[in-house]
Image 1: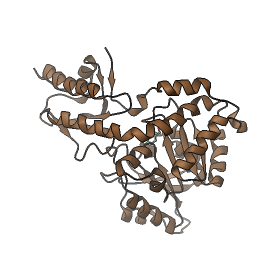
Image 2 (image 1 turned 90 degrees about the vertical axis):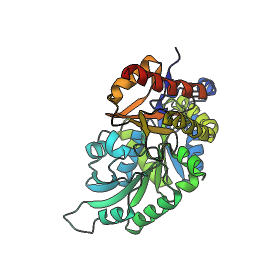
Image 3 (image 1 turned 90 degrees about the horizontal axis):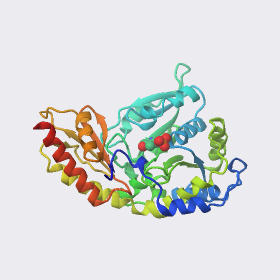
Image 4 (image 1 turned 45 degrees about the vertical axis):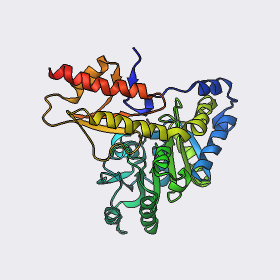
Length: 349
Ligand SMILES: *Cc1c(COP(=O)(O)O)cnc(C)c1O
């Protein structure tokens, strides 16, 4: 049985064109900066987001870590959301490895941080305080339903930070999904921020890798930090080759994933035991929960769905996340919706 895997867009396998490009990629030692394919990927990436330079890193986690370490000294403070990926899912690397103090603000349901909260979080000069050094935003916001932060908001938050001498880093793991949803160019959307990371290994289907982009000087400093973190790779062009295809061929089609997420949401809405998050899906993620009166939990239903060949993300005792991507077609979504309906019936009989 073919598995319909909706757990995440990280499960995407490389496309046939990627495997072909990987097999034939021109290679060199990237630590010597001699891998022509990595150099080409970094050039394309910098251009796409309108920054001076880019650095190929093994993961989004390392991209964010290298960025924050490049922006901050030990004891500096970074302002970020309490639901941000960096705060929740990066193993505390910024404090463990960088000695960077985190100041968490409540993420609003749309993924933003209130400008007033940011303003109040910025510390006055005082030897008792850590120095406020950096604001981190996330777009699209993973835990906030895949919501896209608007260009206007990004501008306002960045301007506020800059006015007080803070830099801004954007965790744009899915920045091309945000750009597709907002119908703006990625380079416009990230123009207000100083640095941005994005992932090749999610909806863009590449097997490995992320890019960190910013000014030339910033990327030079991040390159040294990448080496410190053990992320200097040698013939990394085999990976970069897939990333180039992701940026050229897959990024322009992300809207299809968003349309499919809408289609899946419509189907799930017809199932009486389920309730969809308000506004879901914003991009390629459908967040859905069991209604309070349904005597089941998410783990149990997920097990049952697995029997029907459907895998979903369990993100709470009664909540699921379903993510559409390149390898999910309409037939797969029909199967997923049917599995929910049948699985529920089986368990509630
Ligand atoms: C996936 C993700 C990352 C980075 O994850 P890696 O698995 O380390 O590549 C960072 N931020 C967000 C919002 C993500 O979804």
